[in-house]
Image (cartoon, rainbow, N blue to C red; front, side):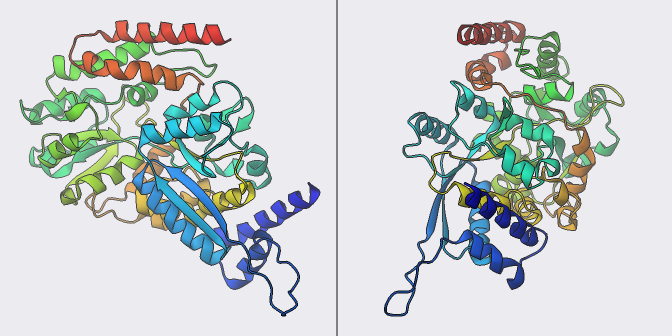
Length: 449
């Protein structure tokens, strides 16, 4: 055990040498020596036996994450361990999480070595005790990484004193808008400070076929106001007064002001939605940092037509951002290569270079503090009209509100999901839907307590 601990500490020290800039031979050589499997004595023929390649499997549900992981694996192989291979499997969101949960509940049979877990599904892995994931807390503390990560984001993957994942993104929410169309209507979006201001200008551009904004994510809008579906102690808060009022206000954008409607196809991620966006039927949309990459991937022909500003506040001088989404990168406890997986996490998730490159590929603004001021995060973004999008994320980042984790968040979300369309259509009042779901989840919590 002491020998393994010494080897981990040596690897961390050497890893720090390559985290700031591309590693030179002097920095990489000792790291390779500490990472590679020990070479046995020379054979009678005078040649050493071949070193076995370490092969790791990684699962993710996001195409942009997959691209970044593959690139980082190539760099890790070049700079750290030439006997390293990483197979990245991109699996559909629900399929991946379901498959992973079944594998972990079966003692790790068929599980990968490393996996992304989206924050909305993460709570479900905490039900029943041991989630089957490596507790990274000691390694994060020993390496000094805990102080370098935004803890409000790490809280999503922490439970009962253990830390099971590393967050990919700060997820600051901003307002993306079609600058060409708003400006043609004479509206300067940089002067819009509150949602009341937004409603006033949105009336100028909204028609029967074109809307200023879709119904936005209730959770993101609620967190901007300081609420959430659960509180810090794990109590269900979906049916709180502020939660119900927030949803009523979102619906009022259509029913009272005529500036909004349900998103095309029911959400902000399907092909119908992006087709309508390309046709200019939606003029703005709140989204986290990662949604900038979704625009680029799904509507590339709109490059140069979009810009972004801080979210309008609920009241003058109020918070002008929120948080939406997030994904933790986790190591599976039954992996035969836990230490190599951890060293790859250090190289990719916990290095300045890795975080900068991820932003360049995915627009995920890093929750890794040493990378936040890097000039490469503040280059003019051609898609967003030459704007310093990273500068906007950095500006609103310090006020990103916390989001509270619960083992029952996934269950609450699954019960609420089929109700959204009826809520949008006016067939179900938010107060009734939220109370029904909240009571059901409270009952489950009570039964399992």
